[in-house]
Length: 323
Image 1 (tube, helix red, strand yellow):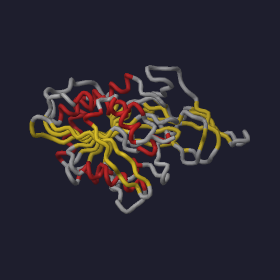
Image 2 (cartoon, helix red, strand yellow):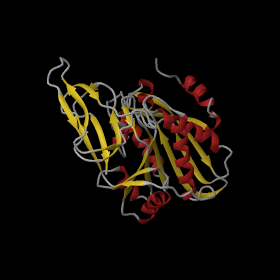
Image 3 (tube, rainbow, N blue to C red):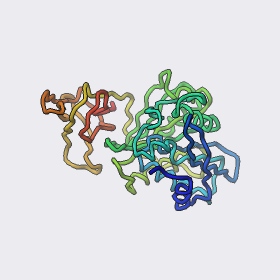
Image 4 (cartoon, rainbow, N blue to C red):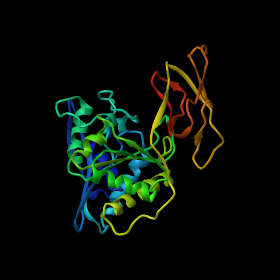
């Protein structure tokens, strides 16, 4: 059974829902209630858009966004905070990353279209909020099928002011791992930079959980970013960081069964950590057990996210490696 408006309101009230308003959004033949917190600071300043649940089954970011709303209601800050703790309401209800109404992944759609499919309409609304922001901080983590090493994902855009924030994030080492790529045409980071808006993807969260450590990491990243934007006092404490400049993918060539090889546990469950070229990552086979194929790493680097579950679909990302 899907969530009703009354059920959402009870859920939101547990997280200080008086700061949240449900915005009615028409998605083609369907209608959703999008939770939005619009918090105005005591002084003029930057506008920060925080989203979570763009993938509907990534729970650490959703929990962190609700906690940020609760913390910020009485926070002395400058500027404006727009927080949307669950973007992909249809995916959240169905416990999946994509939007089941049209099969699209909202994270790959931008800026959307008001006369398009369900996801197009949804992301057109999100784009309208992003158009008001100086920075969009998008909370993600491992979906129901994935594992992830925590990292921040930034892009070099060519916009001096936008890139200055990214350079500050790298300088202070907000995350122990930062992927800092060049923004190519077609990425939302490049489109947003033309309007002076920075786009930051934050990845923290174990599969199917919202562990306290993952939520706290999201909140720490957000606090430091607000400091760098001048929204709250202070500067982040400088930390060591690993900066990666590119990412490559190993994908499934056919449907079947995936059996990953996992290393000994580290501070993250099932974390591969460093990967070496030629290392065995797992094996795949057809559903009748034939055609077994060993999958090996094609380059050395740092594993960013990987597939942990057995179902295999052609095109699935088995491992993303940063270098």
